[in-house]
Structure formats: structure tokens, C-alpha cells
Length: 301
Image (cartoon, rainbow, N blue to C red; front, side, top):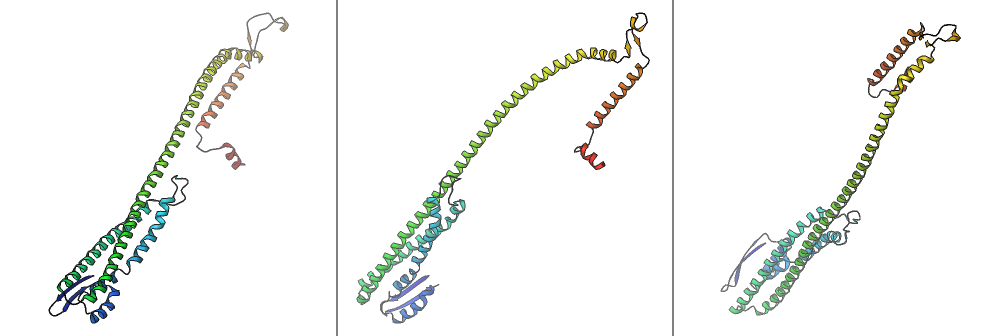
């Protein structure tokens, strides 16, 4: 709201220009202008009416700050034990009240400057002896009370602004502490995983060493088995009665080994069985992935 007044001392008349008056000022201004006897009568009225809603506004701001301040003050520092859902969005929500309170502080400073200017105008009128002494006392008392109200609103605004800024800083520190606590927990988890991986590596190295020793022993046993394989083959052939040594009990003279005519059947069957075994192994190695013999047999049955 913008107010301009031009007062002529000789004619005791004023010219007023009021731009964008407040809603609650319109009715009061018309009545006061008609009944006005003092040239400064309207200024204290407009100042008084402009202060009517500041108490409610500051109280609403205080109520809006209370939940966030409670989160910042009573929230647990541990991430896993957090009993309040304090997050960065709360810090962001504090930025708007801080900006509004800064604007309010500037507006209240302007209102106090206006009140001081009105008081100076009263002093100037008294110096000129315009004849409004009785009205001056009443208006000056009202104006002094409004100045005290403005100062009270300014103190409240400064306190709310300080509370909002302190709450914002506390929230930032709380979130930083929780972030550091989370990082420490992750570091501890990584250390545990590193220790477990190291222990698993030691186990794998021990298992590899044992496997190497077992493979060495298996090579030795395989070599021994291969060393005895010719003797085993010879013993199997000799025990199959396909090759024998004639003696006196047979009614024949002693001589070299005698090979029976059925030896070729043994050799042929051995080669055939060997071929069947090797072919089965080759077919099994080339089977499709996911193929199970018992499922295939069950479907066939």
C-alpha cells in the first residue's frame, strides 16, 4: 500500500493519494477522512491497520517450523535407529520460510521507518503551532504503541529466522553424520567381505595344494597299475584255457605253448566290446544340454 499526502497549512486542507489500499482499510479510511480534524489523523490509522495480521502470520510460521525443529532436535544420529524421518526435503522446506522471514524483517524495518517519519511530522506540526495539540497527544500515544508492536514483531521475526537457520544447519549436520555413519557401516561390511574373501582364498589354496598332492599320488598309482597291466593281461589269457603248456598229464610230450583255435573269437569279441564302449562314451559327451537319460526312458515307457 502506498500513501501520499499534501497538506496546506493556510487552508488546513489535505490532498491524499492511496494506491492499493488494504481490504480492512477501505471502510475505516472513508469514515476517518470524513471525521478527520487533524491532518495526520489517517497515517497512524493506516499503520495500525497494516499491523493487524502480523501476529497471526508469525504464529503460523512458528507452527510450521515446530515439526521440522522437533525432527532436527530429537532425531537419533544412528541410521538404523532413526525414530524421525528427517531427510534433505525438510532442509529444503526451510528455505522458503527463511526467505519469507527475511522479507518480513525488511518490511517491518520499513514500517518502523515510516512510524519514525510520522513522529517527525507530528513534531514539525507542533513546531509550527497548527493548533492540534489535543489530537496530537492521542495520535502520538497510539503511534508509540504501534512502534512498540513493530519492535515486538521484529524481535519475533529475528527469533524465528534464527530458529529456522539453526534448524537447517542442524539438519545438514544430522544428515552428514548419518551419511558418514552409513559409509562407515559400508566400509566395515567391505572389510568383512575382504576378510571372508581372503579366508576363502586361503581355503582354495589349501584345497588346490591337496588336489595337487592327490593328483601326484594318483599318477603314481596309475603308473603302478600300468606296470602290472601286461602281467594281468597275460594271466587272464593263460587262465582262459586258450593258451596252455602241454605236459605229461596230457599224454603229449613237453614242448612250446599250444594256442587253441578259438583264440580269434576272444580277440574279436574284445575288440567289438572295446569299440562299443568307446562309441558310447563319444555319444554321451555329445548329448544335448539338459538331456537326462532317465526322463527320456520314462517318456518312452
